[in-house]
Length: 206
Image 1 (cartoon, rainbow, N blue to C red):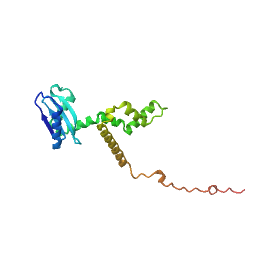
Image 2: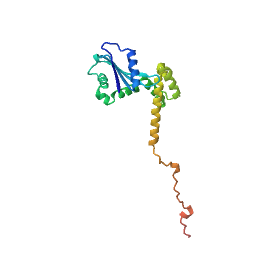
Image 3: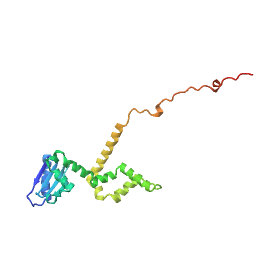
Image 4: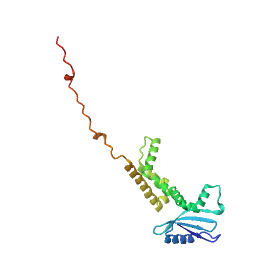
């Protein structure tokens, strides 16, 4: 479901009407809110937490849309009947979330990516000792912004990345063959060897 709050044309879309719409949507259990004044349009995702929060999914101006711009056309699709039938707004939000600085930062700090970075750095400097912990420190202090590392969204992204990695590990474990017998467990066939004396025929006496 979606809640649409339409203000009069020309009315500035301030925080107060947005908060009112978000609170009403949360009370009704609605996930999505559209706030518009006829020209400008904003789409929000309601975050059911304590306290209730929201995330701006997209915003655009109908007067500045370009019919040749795929991104602008995608914005319009989010508000159409066909778009809602295909859950377009949910897919758009997931894509935006996956490419957010919080999820990208969390992915950089995952064990698999740290290992890949270490491998590439070792190719450049094969004689230098490089540990994953050192790379993690550089990323935390010199690459990823502090505002990202200290945000709640980054902490949530870290958990999401960890859950995804654990799921992949479980799937690999379940797909692995279960009835493989180790080579050491296979009995070695015993081959009877005749004694050299029995193998050599006796010589005839002169």
